[in-house]
Image: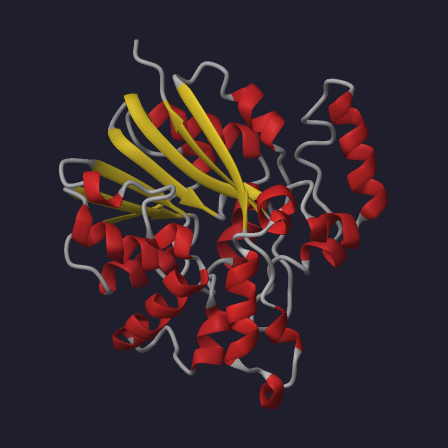
Length: 283
């Protein structure tokens, strides 16, 4: 079975299902998405505001979102953008997103081979998807192929040099850092990390890790996007340690502590995620 099929099967369970379970909601209850969306934007406040996604300037834009999960950003785009196409390699997220929106068009496809004409979108958004495709660099190229000249690509990928990567896989991370210092920021790019490592980033409700996970660096992204008019990369996000505690010990005070860490040195220098906002060069 090829990786695309493995990814399609794995992501048929909506990304975010473990959190939804904690919140007491299921994908079979579309009316409960408000509860999930409230949690999502509280947990990722930099997605809710204008830090990376220009929500307030999308009213005349045709937007492609790639990698849908529980559809929180899709539902916000449905209210903000002129036209939205929601794309995922698995059918279930596409169906779910369409069932909880009014105007969104859905497409089941791999980002490595998007079924759209070149230069056909004003904005492309992909948060937490490209590092699972098996071809991170190729999927980035596809995002830039379908966005128009002068259009914007917003993506989030996992940080190869996050504090957690140093803790979970120190030797591999240090080795990668050494190769990057020597001028090869994509050293071992595309290599599937061990399940033991990937498990610390993503798990489904059965506790299984995705078929493929890889990590990127800010330097590597910037070098690959050298032809873009502008590239802005930022590090952010830290773990929610409360999921490690028994339910009786999970207190809101810990969530407040995590939100404070989002503005700390830890998040901005060794954060889990790289957010990249890049503008495609005009012809």
